[in-house]
Image 1 (cartoon, helix red, strand yellow):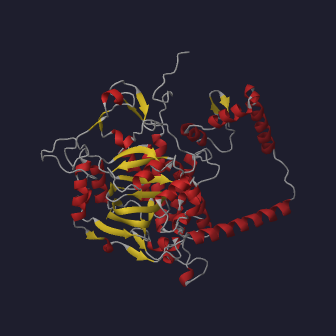
Image 2: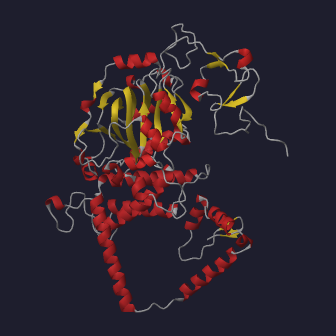
Image 3: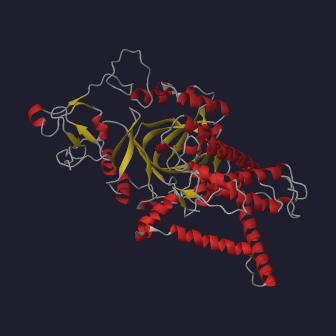
Length: 568
């Protein structure tokens, strides 16, 4: 076999996960960590000399700065090119701009007031500011918690994505190097860290998300433990930014709602309401070639300024367009969550991300998969409410309608883009059909069925504040009661009927299962681990196959084959 090429002073083979830089003299490649060159510093080097070559050639040559208002600071400053977002000139101009006060749209509340029940009743359409934390359920470290403490809990070797604010570009570095940079009084550039998700670290024990985010979260409520897809972790982020850090206008991935808490320092949010007109303008701006040269706040009717000081929590609803300026060194904690209240807007944001060809790295992990899980659970919810003659809330009905439309679109797209996120235990066509049927029951009650009462009607003879509404607490009560009644009914029937005598169909089913089990046993038995792995892959049937199987009558025997082998 040919020898593997070796590089750097460490003489190791190429590793795609590590940043490397080429010497402009000897043309050898070096790991940045081996020659003390950070990735964000490499862009400032004009001619690089490795440790061997700089003995004879002298130190590396750095790029010359020609301007303070362009991402490429080597461009000649002839006064003809506009200011770009994140540059020192942009930050100075931003601080001098005039904005509409955020007080026009902010809802100031106490922590104990912000509950799922309140949001279900009043809606979650405007940002909420909380200064009195009691009752919010948010647990955080003390304000004395430092960036060095973060390094201690997370680990200095963790590789993180940081943003070079003046260039609005990402680069990777170790957390220990970022902490060293953060604690240095003289900083050569502005670096911002906004993507450190720490759910899988020791620091996770120090933080508990607000109750409202925990109780409403799709991931917490609907993601099954046995899912084929890995569980998304987007609930706990630590954000560390130095003064003048800036994140340009954006909508959080998948239209997620967000909670932020400033532990120390200060952040300024520039908020834009997600009206249809504003979303259309945002999509056009995001896809424009000169996006960084246009301040999006100038393109809309109103852009609101909201200052979030130390000790304050901000909740941002689905779809709100926002930019963030760190006005002084700051540490903040935050998290993202999908929920039932704004399903249509969440789906709209996701489809916009697809049209903008947003990289998977910057999208909600397995967004389509969780929508299928949610659809399955909402179907059960609607059935329970219908059987108990309780109408679902308007937001839920509208959300299910939007979800049905999206699921149909995704199934059709499977033909040309076979990247299925349909979970194995879900029959997609059947699920969509059943959801559609439940919506039809609500809108046009079927003859002979129990009529579904209107939204404002009284349930079960109750009156006043006891009127039945499809809130989460109502759902839990209904589900528990319904399950208890069904279990009792089944037990009574079993006691009356005695032991069940198997029918011919039961015997045929058992026989068929036994034959299939024997057919699946073969040479793969010799390696149990390999067999399990292959079987797992074979069970990942394409959506098209699953859809075809669902078209068969439920009373017929169905055999599903993949690569000539029966798997179901």
